[in-house]
Image (cartoon, rainbow, N blue to C red; front, side):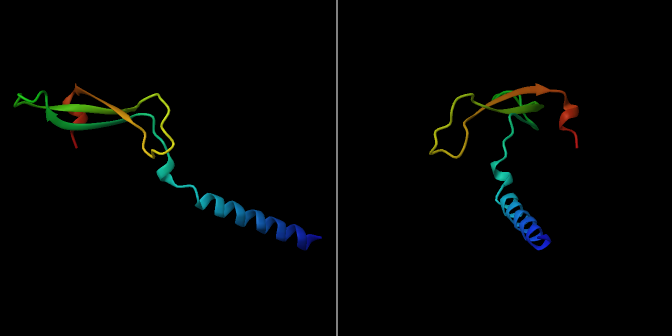
Length: 85
């Protein structure tokens, strides 16, 4: 009896370990990503500014044959302290 319980628990532990190994961090999702970088305020400007670039997912269903979700990029000028190392 104790032998059967031991083998059942070992089987469950192996199945759980295999299941956890199949989960990939590549499949993880992040709703919004903010990146801070130096850039120019406009294409004709020579002044460098600190920009916040947000990658926001579109809120519409992704086709099954596509493995990437479409994004909407937004940028805005922020304080220089965000781009300091």
